Image (cartoon, rainbow, N blue to C red; front, side):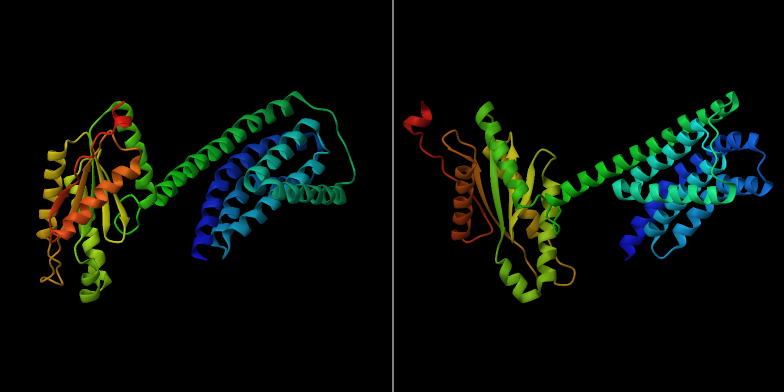
Length: 355
């Protein structure tokens, strides 16, 4: 419910400025059309309230309501009903009628699409019928120069205000879209790329290495006896070890080296433009950093890493061949007793690969 209320408050804030500008400027358009008709003074008091007090009252009503979104939609229908009422009061002066009702219709469409457009049109009709019930069924098709000039601010300022609100909304939607895209590619526990996102980058990096014949090294990293850590100390301590590995990865890698959580306690890194010996030195820094890690609540815990490295080779048919070599090197590191780094052997150049 709090989430819905937050969205409703945001909606009310977006409507507030266009309504304040539109009704404030609209006061002069309606007033110019009403002035020649000699209507009673209570109409002018109502117009003053509608033009300058109602925008602020409507905002207070919607923001204090239990369901701000629904309250604001009702306020928009009140706006539409008032627009129809004023059109009947000034006897459907052509330019003022088109200006007022079209601006309100545009606001309804921008705020609620087809559904609010229909309900807004019905509210305008209800306002027209109310005006006719009070002042009779009348039309005045003449326009004065003053009325034309009074409509110009409404035709310029209000669309500008509404356009700015729509632009700001588009910017926010774009930001949310980028944030959601980042979340869909990120592992929530470690903040690194998730399995799918990292695999996509692996395929991309493989194609870049093949096209430009550049060096790159692939590393697969596994926390030794991670299941035992979870079983002995609990998953909270295990998660802390995973986050520590992520933190150490971010520390030893630069922005061009791409790390991800491959799954469980296995991590993966693409080290572009690094020869094998330098990549091995970076991974050694990582291994030593994890050996120094001490959990504050479990000081006896020791964390070690097994790491498999595979440099890019032209003989690979695809990225999965490269990944398979790194995985075999990781298995070798585990087989040798863990807490070590193993490097995949170079594959022999076949006749097809050398052609």
